[in-house]
Length: 320
Image (cartoon, rainbow, N blue to C red):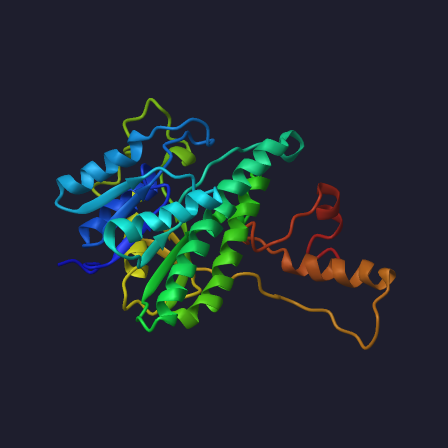
């Protein structure tokens, strides 16, 4: 009897990497799992319908219960069929893990419309669609008098909550997912649904694993039995968030190796105030100084402010 016994889960992007580990662990904890994956490449091209079934076979070999689904979660109809698969195969739905994603990294001046649209569609619409159809199912259950103790786990990234050069599309999509999940948490709480978000760190195809590497296994790093970049490190957090009795909702958690961080989101860190309207001339002095005072040694990129080289020299702290 695992901690998820009796619960039914849908996991998108579950054929490889982090998603595969989610599927395996949730099944080991007793959940019946719908393994969703198109089996495409890291950039979203191609398809391999056998990829999801291979994970189902792994789960069944360990004594678990799972079915494969190869619907495109970025399609409205595909997302609806995915949620329907859980209901039809297992009689309900308790857990949704939005994990599907692709990469099409380019510098902004080289990024094409197709690069932008593909990443936005898979990440943002691929999170919205399954969540929207699952939420409709849970709302009807709640309105019919059934107790709902459901969990949604979305996947953001440090690339969205911080910033990575060459990932304007991916970063914008991942930042959008974090905002989406926090709003959804507030909207769906009344129906008994919790929504949380993870920002995982692990060695996967999207993180640079090449076709010549063996499977999705992390490379040896000489640290002994525990490998901090093993994708399996991320899944226990998802398994806990998926439990019926977990009280957390609206959280954004960074998961890397044995560390879990709690994001605070966008916060006002300093303020200018006057009785009246500011003038551009006043802001030239006051606003620039405010930013300069916030640019301190040791800040992470997401905590500080970027300056051109000329501005960095002109407005460096201590130069006033």
